[in-house]
Amino acid sequence: MNKVIGFFKDSSPIKLVLLSILIGFVGIFIEKPLPNVFMGLRLIAFLLFIYAVIKYFNSK
Image 1 (tube, rainbow, N blue to C red):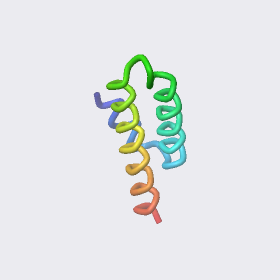
Image 2 (cartoon, one colour):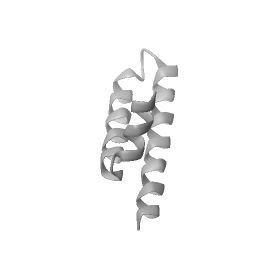
Image 3 (tube, helix red, strand yellow):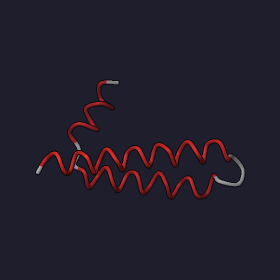
């Protein structure tokens, strides 16, 4: 768990945005067979994107 938290604290906002786009893109392929997983991935991608934007503006 500490490695996961350390990854989010140490990574740059650009990496986090790219990760959120990747998660959202994977969710597109899961939309039809597993709609609940699709919504969860979209939520995670959105939260990760918001975290990256906040981290970017706090660094300036």
